[in-house]
Image 1: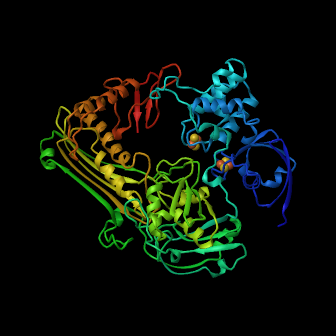
Image 2 (image 1 turned 45 degrees about the vertical axis):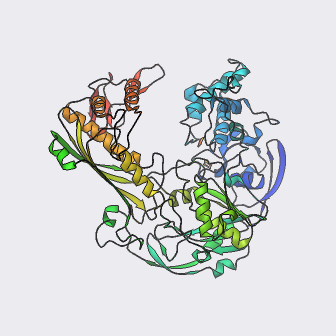
Image 3 (image 1 turned 180 degrees about the horizontal axis):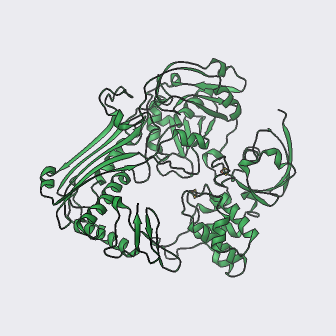
Amino acid sequence: MPELRIEAVVNGRKVARNAQPYQRLLDFLRDDMHLTGTKDGCGAGECGACSVFVDGVLMKSCLIPVGKAQGSKIETVEGLARKGDLSILQKAFHKTGASQCGYCIPGMVMAATAALRVNPFADREEIKERLGGNICRCTGYQKIFDAVELARDVQNGRLPVTALAETEVADGKYIGANVRRLDAPGKVSGALKYAGDMTMPHMLHLQVLRSPHPHALIESIDTSEAEAMEGVEGVITAADVPGEDGFGVFVHDQPVMARGKVRYVGEAVAAVAAEDVVTARRALAKIKVVYKPLPALFDPFEAMKPGAPVIHDYAPDNITKHIPIRKGDIEKGFAQSDLVVEQDYETQAIEHAYLEPEAGLGYVDADGVVTIVSPSQNITHHRHMLAKIIKKPIAKVRFIMSPVGGGFGGKEDMIYQGMLALMAMKTGRPVRLVFTREESIATTAKRHPSRTTLRMGLTRDGRIQALSLKMICDGGAYGLSTEGVMRKAAILGAGPYAIPNVQVDTYGIYTNNTPSGAFRSFGALQTQFATESHLDICAERLGLDPFEIRRINAMRDGAETHTKQKLKSVSYLRVLEAAERASHWEKGAPVSRGGARRDFARDGEGVRAPCTLGARFSEDGKLEAAE
Ligand code: FES
Ligand code: FES
């Protein structure tokens, strides 16, 4: 298709550029105009990170073919700050601390600008409504709404301009004080460069061929047609790895690209570097891989059965890690109990959904140092693993951590940096890889799905005598952080309770699902969900208040955990009391089966409003029904 000649006014400047007809306005702004404040969060019109004004109307540039921008006036976040002076809204975002990772913030600033242009007196509800097309994964939105209200009041003269002034800590006492966010100006202006915004001269674009099979042998890979394509500079497979081909946080069981076998749908099999992304994608279609499908496992309980297919030869039982902990005599504890309750609890896989998809740059510098720039949350460990993979001394490997546009544990794994290094070494040119949102969701680690069987024995007065907990987690196809997650789940699974007899077993199991990995709370969530829900059930059976049963069993100073750790300063009771006060808990309030309980949120007037999750309440706040 012939190129388009696009003439438009961008941020007040006339521009004329050739563009490809398949480009989106987003690509034109980012790749051709280098206006990378406009972000590509989802590419599907869902997140709002790509928001711009087209002829004064707020639009999502990922949904607009570049041809539609012909003759338009386009305004991006870079156009809001005049001569380097941030707009009132940008200053307000800075002042209220409305940015965390910052990836959504340029789009938020654009949507907020639109809101106040449409109605300079918009109230908080209208502001929320008008920002409804923009997603933030980090902030919880309140500070963003605060920022828009602050900007509105300054614009309307209700507040002086000094209300936007950044907080200064006068006496050097930073703890407990509001401090200036040094990184905010770059985030609210769109100037901060994330890995996917960075470019280098002569940079190539990497794309990855991924497995369509959950479990299959690779009989052959033919890359010759792809390599012969014009614009293709390199193709790599497992055969290009010169060193020890394995990475992972605890066990190095994952090759940079599948080696002889694929273990989940979406696993990297080969990668292409080309002059542009489109050519690289076309070349992927030319790579011929012959697979021999194997029986696949999608359920950890099936994977644990004798005779189940084996996913990794080194683990014939498909167990990635088993953490057993024993304290006291569990059977004696149950025998001494007046009430024994057993129940199963399940938690599901959860996607991190950071707004910034995975991205990175790899290059070999003038001194032969292989350098990776990426939002990795664990760069020192990555550096050591990569040195072994590419068989170079550690001094010849460098990792630079780019700004992380949300991680939540999901960027701890080195799932693509090895390909960038190998390709930079093979081609001698800088290489960039930016995941699509689909690629990010389909191929990266999730929170471990779990099933926990919990048995608790208590005496009539609510004292826990015995706790037995067995958790089976789906670790997916590779180990990643599974071992650490199992450890933390086991260590924290008994909760902050003094229990004389404890038996805990946590298992991470290999399956052919997408690998599971680190996620906020790192295993504690799964077991504590079970333990805390179980305590509510036991409290109900014993006719005790749920706060009271926790107080009865709470660890106090000097307590010893089931991992033999002596605790010197235990704040649990203070936390519990604060939670009780903050939740306006009424003693004796009903608890439903399965742990659904009455929750309260404060509205603006400080009036209690029942949360509707899993329960129905009458107008005066009484529980009517619980699921
Ligand atoms: Fe356009 Fe998400 S809405 S990138
Ligand atoms: Fe909004 Fe991180 S600050 S996504």
